[in-house]
Length: 207
Image (tube, rainbow, N blue to C red; front, side):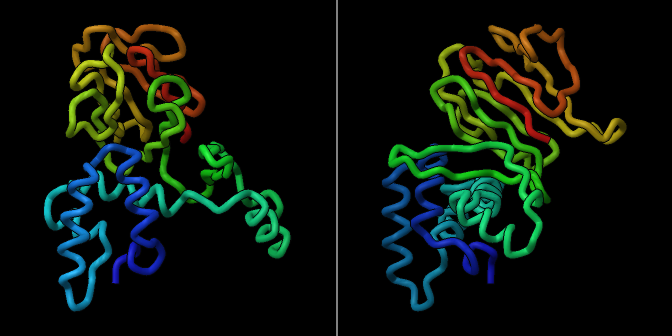
């Protein structure tokens, strides 16, 4: 049984996959129809992946987000108090939904994240779930940005085995890549707290 089957319901998965624009609502409906015909229904995420509406990398992003996205902070505090480990949970980002519900991402045992803090996609969080991440405007980019000043494939973020850190590479973008306000020549390392600007979009690095 998959992690999604154990932990996540279809509605949580669908909400995120649509929010991140990985699929269309019509794709969801087709998969729901297929799911309804199954004697033992698979989770909607598995069906989307099997039908190739969702790539493996996109699927992993959603699963990772669901894994590390927490309940409201009050529930976390009760859990921490019960364990007498008040400082166990190191909050790295807080998001507030349109309904006013707050959700948090935890640093402990989680992969590095990029959080969009300015731009049309503000509030979205992307875990770095593989060693090379493409960022751009085109569908198929690992991180797809809604920004007319962002190139189709604007840059890459790669894990550097030698330094055991992450690097960002400008893929000959039209408007350049800026880290902490400075345009990079081609490639540079990134660290905790760095802010990456691509067009009108700013992403914050959480390691």
